Amino acid sequence: MIHSSKQIKNFLYKYTPIILLFTSILNEIDFNNLGLKYFSFNFVYILIFYYSLKREGAIGYSSVFIAGLFNDVVNGLPMGISSLSYLLLCAAAAYLRNITLRPNIFNDWIFFLITILILNFITFSYLILFFKYEINYFDQITNIIGTFISYFIFSYVFRFYDDFILGKSN
Image 1: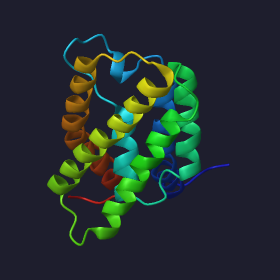
Image 2: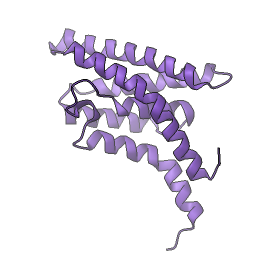
Image 3: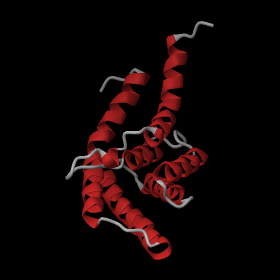
Image 4: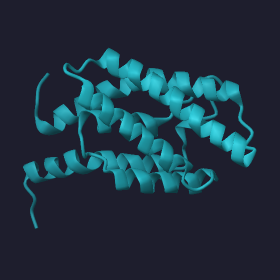
């Protein structure tokens, strides 16, 4: 069956965020563990927040929940901890989307920082209190800063990709 270029573009526009989500969770190269001492970032947080904020329904809540379970298995975390974090991230993005009158990358960026700080606090408090999980705080601070900075860059990359697929010229 021959597909038109419009059908292919629609498929890519619809499913690329989900494909990226599961690929980034299931790959062996984790952006959090690149081996760089002073740089790491959580690509999944960036992806989920951006697409939950900018394109409602691009990544469904069930996909996010299942991706979180896969992440827990891959990283050896207690089941459900990543799913909870990812769903809270979706909720924060949905909240920001609903209260925002005029979208602004700077406001999104600051809100993203506040959100990941709260999420990491909740996640690591849970891991420490209930599972006696040992956490390297320097690595976590480095990861938060890297994720925060990377969001700004990836938001432009994702927007460019979406505009390219849709045929918009900005």
